[in-house]
Length: 543
Image (cartoon, rainbow, N blue to C red; front, side, top):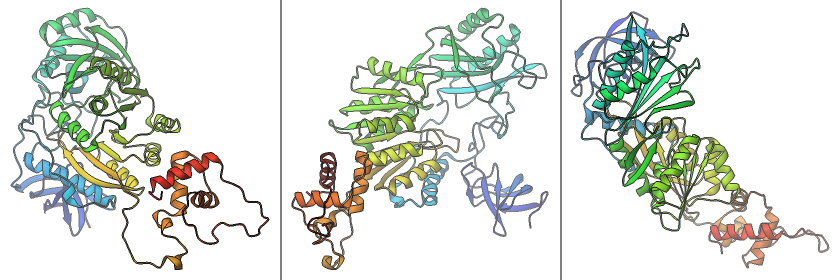
């Protein structure tokens, strides 16, 4: 039995989803941070649980062939990266395996051959176009940086190898000017001070947006601070003050005050131009984003007559790419400012076949469906929690020919794929994309296609013994009922189905749903239900 304080030697056999090394001691799992597959390490057991233990590296006895020296001086403290001690090509393999393992864990039906190799980057540094740092005061010094691994303690850094050099310049300048103008960092425990976070966004032209998060609207020397910042870092095109006076770990509040410039910056994806506001979602890696979204559009295979839904559309990035091929695109997003930007982006790019809706996807998407607005192709790009059940249920009811799912979380991706698979969809392609080099995170694009109702295994049966005719073998009464309810919103009886089938000349079992006596009164199928049943029979190719 393992106990805390035990020192032992183990070989790392795998990595888990958080990037921890996995070892086994007498078939008991031990997680070891900072270890990679192939390492032989001496560890001390620091935590024991019912099903696993946690070990801390004391000494690397034999390094893995894939272990490298991290080029970042802050790596062991900073929580931003988890794999900077691992060869990049091995990172790509690890991310592919993460996706495969999650699909298997959710019992998704697939061949591993449809999961392609992870699309990597040539230049794996300075790729981020957004960074968020906390601001604190410690030992009478202003410190700015990310959180320490697994804590809310700030790591004071000189620069970040993943953000632009211009962003490094902003951090240094802001830190010095806080001291010069005596602007206090916010202390959450004492509930005093001014500055609590800074967020820096940049575009491909290296134009910068600086967001200063404060606890109050006003603070002294604000004008002087802004003027000197712009003078020291000419790439700053806009400065926005965000007010967050809540006792929370959330970085930003809801109120924005533009202090300099337009309050937005402009960036491009493919040949499209997009407006970016302080709170709007925009993928942080522009090089990989183009590959990610181009793959999604390729998988969607949109035709000029297709209606598309882009659910969780953000500022309309995928929507506008799809709109260049589709008849119409409907975008749905919970952040109202993002929808405002999406509409502006459509106008800016002279695209007029889009319509955007602000609100919760689980409310808006079912509402559109009830208004008889249906998609031929659905694209979803949800947050880490995946799609809400109401969204999945509506997609299933809508029965689009394709669903393209862009995911930042392999676990919820696999969960949602299984739900779609259980309702008539087949997983066709899986493409991992390395959107975040040196971290455990992976983006994935998958394509699911609706199974044809005729995609069945043919077997030799005596239909007479089953009391079913050849035409009925296309779809069962239960399948017809289910399809009508999902697509038309009401129930139909077996009697109504048999009446419509007889009317259309389809065979029905000899005594199936006939009245028991000649003078019995039999309800007749209403016109709207007859129309729905007829459409369903066409869907199942029975007429």
